[in-house]
Length: 229
Image (cartoon, rainbow, N blue to C red; front, side, top):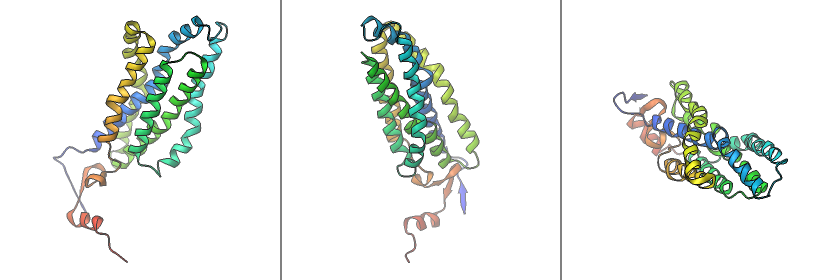
């Protein structure tokens, strides 16, 4: 038996907001938005002599492919880990991997840095990408799961639109290296704290059921004091 909190804001919508933000940032920085930096990185690598001009396109043929390769390869691993670790833990790890990848990218002086950065960007998608966010939101919703997931998945598209809008003026004013570092602050200052302090793995963590139904007092007691055999 349950009773619905009709007049109370359901915390699950905060989870939806954080998950949407996570996809906006992770997909935006790993896939949709990062190409805005490519031309500037390529010019630097060629100008420094790290890569011959006739080889730079091959570098940027392989580098983005590594993002998708690692994202695809780690999807089953992430699927296994989501049952072992809490979604919040996965997201925190993903934030560190994504932020670390961007910091390494900002220091790129050779193709090795570029390849490593793209591998980390792809890896981060397994921890703070679609799979984890979908599982997290599904924990919170049953009746309105389709609506909630539909909202969350908009982050995969909007990231590719919004990140370039933020990054382009930063590149023009501070150069691509500092722009990438400044963009990474979105992770360190916004997404990481949100994952640590606001993400709850399940509604039962705060005494609720999916879709905002409150657990009755007798059920709460049963959860806290399960019968012994």
